[in-house]
Amino acid sequence: MVVERNGGGVKPAGIPKWLVVAVDISLANLGLYCGFILVAGELQGFQIGPLFILLPSMALVTVLLFNSLGLYSRQRSGFMPIVRSMITGVIGLTLFSILFAFWTRAFMLQRGIFLAAPLFQLLLLLGWRMLYWRLELWIHGQKKLLVIGNRYETEQTLEKIMHLPQGLFEVIHVLAPEKFDQLTDWLPQADTVMITGSLDLERKNRVIRDSFDRNIEVFIIPDLYEIILTRAAMTQILDTPVIECHDVQLTFLQLFTKRIFDLTFVLIMALPALPLFLLAGLAIRFSSPGPIVYAQERVGLRGRIFTLYKLRTMIVEAEEESGPVFSTEEDDRVTPVGRFLRAARLDELPQLYNVLRGDLSIVGPRPERPYFVEIFQQAMPEYKLRHLVKPGITGMAQVAGHYSTNTHDKLRYDLYYLSDYSFFMDLKVLLLTIPALFNSEAARGVKKELVEGDDPSIRPGGCNG
Image 1 (cartoon, rainbow, N blue to C red):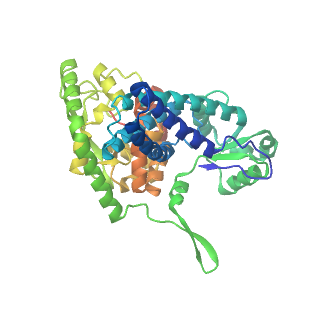
Image 2 (cartoon, rainbow, N blue to C red; image 1 turned 120 degrees about the vertical axis):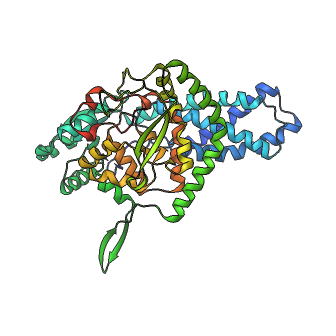
Image 3 (cartoon, one colour; image 1 turned 90 degrees about the vertical axis):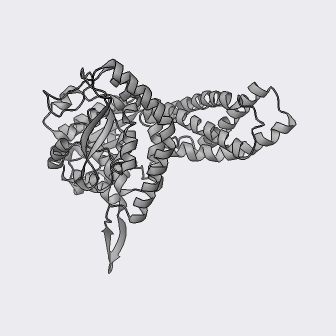
């Protein structure tokens, strides 16, 4: 949750979003034109029409696609997420250009244009976005960050901040709740405040109010109940304003639409997935003894147990001695082929069959094993709310986090997905899954010390297979 700056101070305006959109559109079209000139050599009369029919429609798709990929939001996680999203965006633009040319019978454009244009588009757009990112850092400058929270919560937050690119934040102080009376001493020195939790409502209000008075932006790591309130509506009883909390369960129409989308997706993906499944199966068979497909019990909709299928990535009987444990970064139980399958997410292919059976949806919270569900629900009673919707192959926590993201943070994403669900939310998560595939950290195992820790809320949400 981010509370934007307010107050009477002056802050850098940054580069206007309309200018960013205009440059993106111009460079996407310029890349297509450069690809055209490289392949065709010159504009000829019968080619001018199809080209200028394609350009305006591609401008609209550029805006919609890039916005869905988060390319018009403030980037605070470095440049690599921008690169991954931009690659996905250019691939999407290319597919649209091919389909549009086919629908309008504009294939008098040479096929090579649709191979050359993406390269020009990617080079132009990445060059511009690198410049834009650097300019934003220069305009806004390094933010002096005041972190407020208890030791355990702030340690997790500071570890993540240390992985951010240099120049974004400088942590000036960590203010413990028991020393809250020192807020007035540290607040004037800060540009940004981050509340990591463990503050009562009165103190949170105090931090926000005083920060607004000084034109300081505030980041709040939300409590789980605060995420559920995102779907709440303001109403009144007589003259008293009240917040009406709605049920986070999906309606019949939403469930019906979601099921139709799941079946359609499986039918579309079945043909390209089959040869990948066969090649992966042969690699597993010849690299290590044991079955190709791995079956495991998972907790599904409303706590129902079902059998989930994956391509085997570990040695046979990997948990015979250890019992149920999470996979670590350097897990020697993972086979060489299995490590590649995990990195490429190909081990998830058999779950299309689970979607067809109705055990899974394409998008939803990842299903967990009964052993871990029991542990997590004891530590976090809200964990059972994620079972109000069918689990998925991909989900909000998977595109926004990593395998090693702690369970508490993943639950925040899952509850946000439930609270703000719509069909377009599913499309957005599915689209954001594509750049996540290029992120090797997303599939990396968790640190061994987290697996062996006593607090289940900091353990990763994931599975072995």
